[in-house]
Image (cartoon, rainbow, N blue to C red; front, side, top):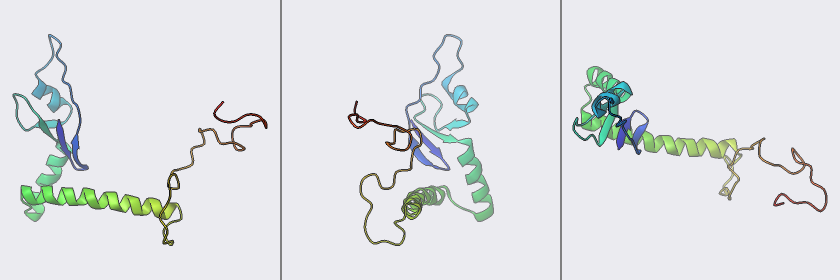
Amino acid sequence: MVIVDKSGVHRLEVRCCECPNAMSPDIQMFRHRFFPASFNRPKTVFTFRVLDDFLLDSLECGTLAMNYYSKLRELIRVARQWRQLKTMKWHGFGHRSDNPSTGELALFCPACPQPGINVLLSEDESLDE
């Protein structure tokens, strides 16, 4: 199912309850704050959050639906680039010209075994064992 939200356009597998006394799929989606694009076999839904945002944007700025969708897609692309730049800066690559190698942008995980930090190994042991 395609889910359109303020955070972007997502493709997720969605299954509605099919129990004997279950509500119809469209009502189930309304209960989860999704507005289906069709009511028979919905394949696309819009979150109430994106619909409220579009309503406000169109009232205040006169934004057309096509322009709003285009703006939403551009925002998602730029947000990904911004996140990558911030991650590189946080890990010390903001003022260096070399590219990070594998694992250099990973956060330190205190729960993972770190020899000499949270795991004491004898001379004849290794983490593989």
